[in-house]
Length: 149
Image (cartoon, rainbow, N blue to C red; front, side, top):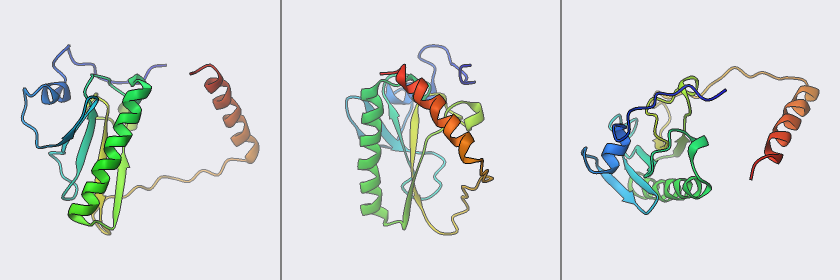
């Protein structure tokens, strides 16, 4: 079953338009495969988005080179955030599909400076399945991985 996403008409994706220079953005960094720019909804000062240049809706749509470039750019931006804002923590966030709470359907990573009591929580119910079930899940993933490059 494919991820539940919105696919805008060609050339109408807000990030594609931003990357093309049709919409303004406070750009931080760019290279051949990625563009980093300030998030309009700053969680904390320095909150930056890293997007791939080519329209790819989710992580599953990236090439291996794009995935590597996005992480490399995110790391560069994280170092810059640390140098410029000195936060006590940095969070990377990447969402895919509606159920994953993706809101802009163009692959991007949030690089977010974090501070204690900044209002963000990342808490989910811990489920402690039996070891046998974890082994079953691991086997399913190994089988799926054996069919991928």
